Image (cartoon, rainbow, N blue to C red; front, top):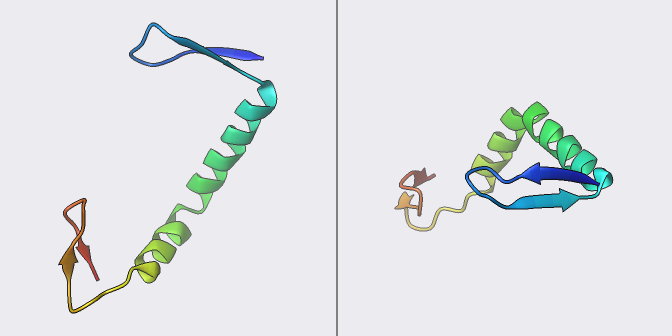
Length: 61
């Protein structure tokens, strides 16, 4: 088990070491494939009737 202090909080969380290692692997994979993931996100957007504002203020193309 690994115990962490939650940022900006007085709470502590305790998680199994396997969970921490799995999170670390997922994060490393995300960083390694960041450009490919962004490309997939852009390709997966659907346009209906032209550019639309999305919730984050960017255009969906």
